[in-house]
Length: 270
Image (cartoon, rainbow, N blue to C red):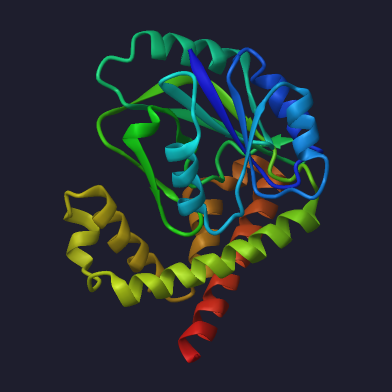
């Protein structure tokens, strides 16, 4: 009833656990970005259908996958290799697609784990569009893409478990170094090609994608943005309730934000 889409790039460590958590589906697709390790061999051995494409940016890559991969079922669940579907989420998704009503997509609640702790509070959001009809969804932005749904979106129970530090701190820092470059480029692209920033539209624009653009621009224009990010996560979102893991994660996110600030300034000087 549900097809599975897993995006991979050198995921030989995490992919087996991910595949096991979605083994209830008979239509699993591994969408690989030219891995140089055993990722493709692991996927093939597990019976998954493998599609390869060179990665360019997140939105373009994901949009290509939704438009070109031939899924067996009308509903697709998107998951990363470092994520796991819990049994409760599996059951809730299967029930949702049996009776979706007018929903074209469903949000799922994700639990991020760090230092053995569920980061219950320190996340900006725990809800993500992951179960959808592929012809009703598209992505925007070079990195951390926005999921745009043509039609209503519901929500399912259960948890999607996420282990972003499964490959260690060095891998997390390297990945976010890459992400920060794309974020800086996205900021510059927005300022060159999009409409001028409007504070009013950041709060009252009815179109979601346009409102989010102005909200992002508002955040990008804040002074001391890395400090604001830390205070938002640690105090505003009550990340202190997550203990040492919450404090460390909030600091890491503020460092990531500072990397974006520095790289944006560098691009502006150019």
